[in-house]
Each structure stands twice: as structure tokens, then as C-alpha cells.
Image (cartoon, rainbow, N blue to C red; front, side, top):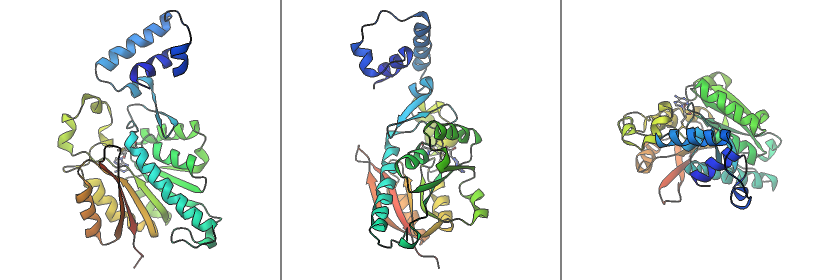
Length: 283
Ligand SMILES: C[S@@+](CC[C@H](N)C(=O)[O-])C[C@H]1O[C@@H](n2cnc3c(N)ncnc32)[C@H](O)[C@@H]1O
């Protein structure tokens, strides 16, 4: 739906088809006030998703507010990549084959997935929804983001499948001695100095969700360094990457000596958007 359709379907409490095909009179005063206030906020640059308090991601509805990044369509590519990888292993395991990630002997166990920097919970919740085999841990450093993510998990009926944890990257997981088959992450990746030059809408989003340090790569360095301690042998790290970052992030992976890059997936604008890498065996 375009922004006008989003606004009017919310004001009228109807779907898109009804907007065009149902005969309606004028807006009542409550509806008119909603539209008027929403337009004033939008003209100032506030994203439509914050005004409506919700957005769609992977065909699911998510509550959003100023404590969480608005889920982006590009991030659906990360989710689809993770789903594809998991389904491949599940199919092999169901065919009786032992796979590196999910040995046939442990088929009864859930496949453990870790989502770092969950924000609204969009990645973790989508994976929980589409992958019945998965058990998910989702972390964020922001308590307020975690509150919203928990609400979204409940709204999408997957609260039983996800453990939410406040953590600075992997820090709170250190005591658990848990290894994950897959770690997904859409880290903050905008260079600090560039944030103020971006479109006005971005300034409404939490800076902590955007700021990737001086060159935008700070989180990749930390994650690639720390992830091996939390991934199983052959475990897979899947990360969203920013425009023009593929080469530098590839170098960080290579220099770590702990990962083999599997794939760089492009988005619909032909931009490198998701990188997947396999953790080598533990020494
Ligand atoms: C780019 S947003 C991604 C949010 C969500 N996963 C998505 O894809 O829409 C990055 C998230 O990382 C969180 N974050 C920032 N620094 C962090 C840290 N040191 N440890 C854990 N999470 C962090 C932010 O609060 C934010 O929710």
C-alpha cells in the first residue's frame, strides 16, 4: 500500500479493497482529526510507520515505535536466506542424512538460532513463524526495544519459541555455554559521521540502531571476533551489510581465520546485502 492508502485504511479501519470499492460518505470528526494530525507529523518528516505504530515485514504485522528501527524490506532477504539454509539442513536430516549443523542423531532437538540486535524482533519472530524446527534466542542492548520485541512475539503467537535477553552482543550468553547452529544479525552499520546527512526520516529512528562507529564496520569487527565462541562447528553467521561494505567485511572475515565465506546475496537493487559465512571446526 502507498502512504495515503496506509493512512486512510487505518483512519477508517478498513482494508485496501474496501477503500476503493465501498461507498463512503465523508470522514467523521474522529477520523478527520486522526488524518489531520498524521499529515502534520508526516510533513515534519516522521516516518509513516511510527505515525501508524505498525508496519509489515515478511507478511506479518509488527508494532513499531521510536525505540526500534523500522524493519526494512532489505532485511527480508536476510530472513529468506536463513530460512533457505535451515530448510536445506532439515530436508537432509529428514532424509536420514547427518548434516554438519544438525546430526541425524539429534533430529529431535530444535535447531538453535541466535538473533543479535533484535530491535522490533522482526527477524527472530519471522524465523520462529516460518521455521517450526527452530528455537530462538534474541538479544538487544536496549531494554525498550526488547519490550517492543516481546509484544510483537506475543502478537504473532510465537512468544513460546523465543527467549529475549538484554545483552551487549554476546556478553550475557557467556555464562550459558550454549552453541548455536545459526547466528543472524542486522547490526548498526552506518558510519557515525554520515547519519546526519541521511534523509530526515532516519533522524526519528534510534541512533543506537544506526551508528556503526567511525567507518560503520565496528559491529562487524566485534561480531566476527566473538561469534566463534557461540557457534557450533560449521555453524553459520548471516549478517545484513550496508552499501559498499561487502569487500571490507569479507576482509574482516578472512583476517579472522575462523570463517569461510559462503555467499553474498544481492538485494532487489543489485546491491550486496547479506553475507553468510561458515565457522570452521573448533581447534
Ligand atoms: C540495525 S538495528 C536492527 C534491528 C532489527 N534486527 C531489524 O533488522 O530491523 C540494530 C539493533 O542492534 C541493537 N544494538 C545496538 N548496539 C548493540 C549492542 N552492543 N548489543 C546488542 N544490540 C545492540 C540496537 O538496539 C538495534 O535494535
